[in-house]
Image 1 (cartoon, rainbow, N blue to C red):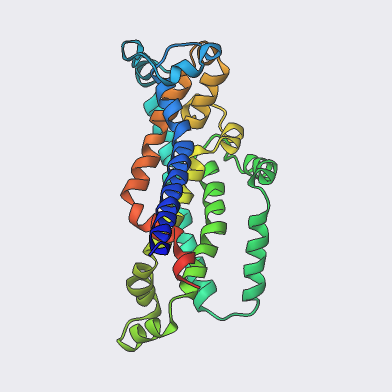
Image 2 (cartoon, rainbow, N blue to C red):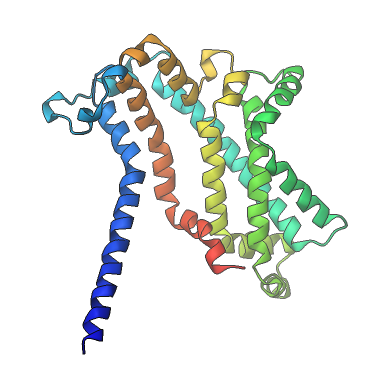
Length: 289
């Protein structure tokens, strides 16, 4: 009779401890976001941002930094956002389409050297992307693609293909060949089976691949800083860098954080729109061998 209450207390203690750990983990993860949002509503200089800013006086909060970011930048925030969305959206769409075909070919076609080619792609993905900046610059400079949309979309798309192609390939490996064969028996061509059968089954991994392919170019600074030489094609990453390195950023850290908050909105919108597929893609390893 005494053992059961003790076990009950032990289970309760474990449950409370696990909840406390989860609460602390969530607080640790959300603290930077809270700090950035609170700081964006402040006009204090960077040197004056201390712990008391974390619990601000409601009367001291102001949206002046957001007003400056949205309406008083040169080039305008809308122009920076448009350029970033063009680069990231085009690269994500192109890279995802090529990755789907690459994954399909590597998974469902038997050709000489397939395994070697897969290992070669994996080996390429191990190298940091920054190593390609200089070769990219010399190659695209000789082609006259510096300071053009195409000059950045091509390397961004190539980077998406390398990683996303392997993701799609691994997912298609888990789809039984019988499904495609049944589609062929029903009269579909292999191309039709790919678009009408396999692609719908790959929505989770394609959603994850699209999100990652969009996120990289949208937040990239290295290639954009090297390839863009005029203000007409500047991206959000270059815009926040110019603010942070200028007098405005050092005197009012709220401008930098306000820029970061507004810049993150398309990423949040993208995630919310494709949340179902992104989460499904992230949890593939838990349900598929």
